[in-house]
Every structure is written in C-alpha cells, then in structure tokens.
Length: 177
Image (cartoon, rainbow, N blue to C red; front, side, top):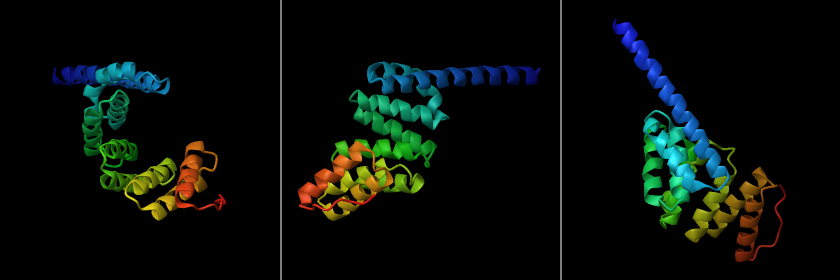
C-alpha cells in the first residue's frame, strides 16, 4: 500500500540522515585534531544531506577552508546562510573568507550580523576589530578588541589583539575587565 512505501522511504531517509550526522561528527572531530584533509573527505560524504542541515554545511565549509579551498568554502557558507540565515557561525566563516579576499567592509557586515545573532561569541568582537584595523579605523578596532577582552579576559588571542592594537596606537592604559 501507499502508506508502507511512504514508511519505508521515511525510514531509509532517516537512516541516511543518521549516517550523514555521524560523518559530520567525524569530520568535526578531525578538524579538532588538525586533520582537515581527512575532514574534507568525511564532510563530502555528509554534504548531500546539508541541504537540510546547516551544521553539515558549516563543517564542510570549515574543512574546505582549512585545506585552502576558500572559494569553495565561501559558496558552502553562502549555501548554509540561504538555508539558515540565523547561522551566525556560517556568517563568521564567510567573514573569514572575505577578510582573506581583502574585502574587510563586506566581512565586517557579516560579523556585525553574527554579533547580533550571537552576542556572547566574544571572538566576533576580535574579528570585528581585525576588520576595522585593516581599513584604518583604529579607534573603532581598539573598542572592539577591548570588548572582546571584557567578554573573556582569559582568552590569550583577545589579549594579544588588544596588546598589538594598543602598541600600534601608542596607548598604554590597561583595560579593566
């Protein structure tokens, strides 16, 4: 009957999604141990299911980007954002690609949207500071770096960004987190 066929197709689809989720988790784990080459292989297996899952697309984009495939990563991040405009992490990934393409104004626009979507992701303030510094907006960059340190005073990258900007501007006072 039609119901049996529908049930079998639904079961097959859910098993395929579970397999894709596993491959995506494996790809993500491979990224954590600095094996983006293997992560791309696993993410490519999961990617066909990314049309329904922004997390799969994001991990695939990260893996592509880590292996030097910035243009491919950019497209995957954009696909992810078409699927899930709320995916702040994909905006962050896209912003990174745009910065490497020397498009800091476009990158900053993505970062600002991401900050609005996830105001607790302190690294976005550091990323905004980097984009602003690259266009010579040093005072604004300094304010972004200071905010990143206020949000996470123990983050060494945020501390280093702030230290470098202060040194570049000749500012010596220390921020009180």
